[in-house]
Image 1 (cartoon, rainbow, N blue to C red):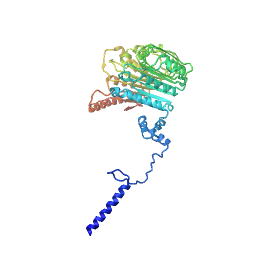
Image 2 (image 1 turned 60 degrees about the vertical axis):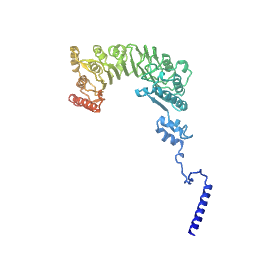
Image 3 (image 1 turned 30 degrees about the horizontal axis):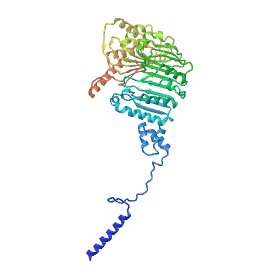
Image 4 (image 1 turned 45 degrees about the vertical axis):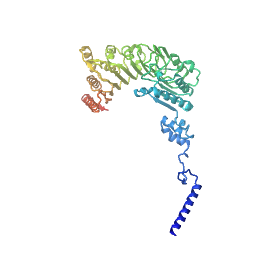
Length: 471
């Protein structure tokens, strides 16, 4: 009996299992699906404003673009999170240029697609891109970037196409390609680096952009003559850095800041700049400024409030005699000097002390040093001149900053002279220690500590009211 009962129970159980199997619509060999409790998708309930303002706006451009694959709803939401500023930054580095042949076409297409999608939304465009025609850079694609920016009524256009390997650089579109664009009245800030810009394009911008406040052209290789004449313009800042322009003539009544660096010594002509107060000079033109500043800036040198020089110290040393007749910088309050390393002889900073003496209202002086060797010689003339200058005290210098300090003999001598002529000094800042070529971390640490110990020696020359800050 028990055996028959077990058989009947087993047959009933098999029948029930067979019945359940026929009722469940599952594939053979799979488990039947269980009913799950209802799940509420709170993420999908968020409004577009919350997603854009609190999620996408906190992501980088690359991360925001990748969210377009989540769903149809997210496909174009990222375009609303960009705001008014659109920045593409792929600067030229050694690591980037080594893989340029693979990455550049992809980056170029990506920038083009994004600009086509978001062109109605931004008014400031910045692109840092290593332009290299030998690895596939397309002039047509970059021309399209410029066209989209100008048609979109941008107020700020910055293009930096610096490359470490390309012998050719990009040329800004000619007049006949962009003259038909009438939507450039809002353009206020234009910076073009490593781009050939013709004189006709500069004239076109100045005449068609009444709101233009800053124009910067770097490393243009066109041998043109430039004439900046803007009688009613709002132009306040003008930069021509390492360009090949043969002659630049400037007449701008509202110009405040001028930055100029060129291999041509006497090609800058200032006709009318009554408000000029900030001047940045570099390359070979620094020598012309020290030697012929009275003639080149005869009407405006006395009104400068800020002066920055990027100069070769060996060249400046031979400008000492010219500085004896250098005009007074009556209103100069801030002086910045970047010294290019070169072979120095004794008293390499005599010209600098003389320049500081020519600015009686100077309050802040900053110098970026570079480590070089000093070759002493018997220079009795400059020795006597230095002794005479050291007797005169500066009436207003309160802040001195020494960058890339290495603790060398000439740098210690410069610091001692600066402290001796600055009785009203309030603070001396020594920072940016020069890193030696030693590779081991311990050697680098020892070098930095040695430089710090050298900087501590300035304490014995400090005026009573001054404070030494070592960063």
